[in-house]
Length: 228
Image (cartoon, rainbow, N blue to C red; front, side):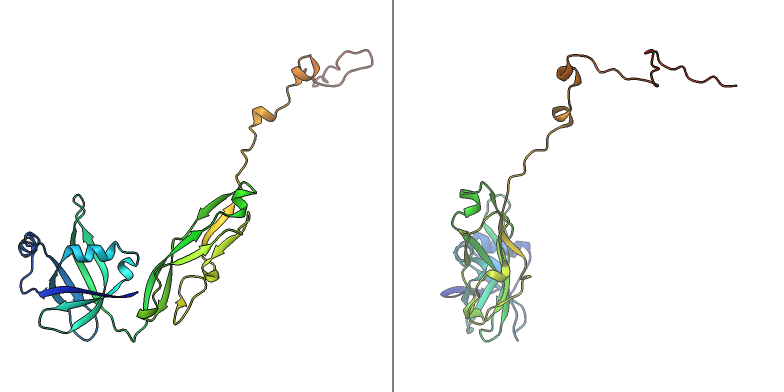
């Protein structure tokens, strides 16, 4: 999504770890701008301003203006970034020049809304499978997010990527049958063998007797034939 935000930047002549440390001491950080007809350009920007953009509702899909000293204002997006593993501060970012007349590919968050009927009335569980979909559109048509109402979902029903209404120049790139969320039933635990086995002794009051051979009329067991 395009926003009227301008971030100041300065061209960097030197690179390396020492230069990066000097920039951070000054409250700045290294970044690289690439894309379009111009080649890659090393710049220094404010980590606070880029962090504020990344933490906004549009996040890395935000298109903002980069004002490089002595050059024209350029629309860009943050396509890659690195945070300090302990301090959590932004250390580096890659910025891509955006041609507002060209389509681009982005991933947009999907948010579910409402309590499914299958959970409230049927005792099922609502599972969220995918939290974003991939689309292609013009830069000015990038949505902040998609909101999907799941109130009418019953057990065995789902919302898929193809069910999300798209507007403007937007085209779905994710598989249309990709499940966003669904409602499933609780699986009953299968009874164990011990629980389902019949206790003969308890049922008849007598121990079960394993019988061998056939009985004669007199009641005695027939002896097995002798081998010759």
